[in-house]
Image (cartoon, rainbow over all chains, first blue to last red):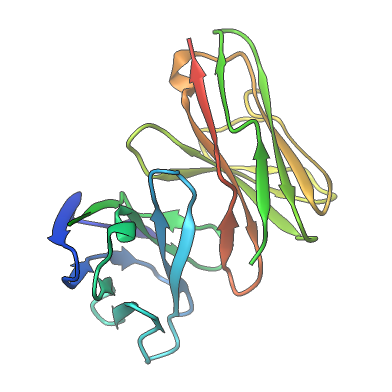
Length: 113
Length: 113
């Protein structure tokens, strides 16, 4: 069974700083997809970024980028020039085969002014 | 992506009653999913609902407690039956839009007293 682990329950940084959220996963499949979702206090789950396992190039979406280390089964999210609106719960997730998303426990990120 | 709405956005219900949550999508989708997010927790998949077939439930969730309907490609309902305080959670629907990407509705916050 696939598992996703986020070892940082909470993080806090100052506005404009760069922050990295960690995620590790376990899978027996060779083809899978990894995602980062953001859940602000409004509770709406928002897809931030996606990485396909067979692509070596790290995905980037504006200020958000990932560091995908396939051999280490690591998938961290880097947020550059953090903004107050980045304050949210961040969930790492993976999907393989049966298209079931498996989520990590989440990291509560607070951006301080 | 897709625009997904859920009704109701929140409700307070008495123990022993049932609540039906609606999920509407602005485009036709094959796969819809229902998740539960207990307070302070991550998301847990309840079931996968494909149009034209019975919903597939995850371990720990049963049809008698969480009946699901999927009458067409843009709509689904989840009923939480014979509620107890332990059912107090956020319930979210999502749709798969290709390449394993899931997009979520705004959620329904249920409180059972």
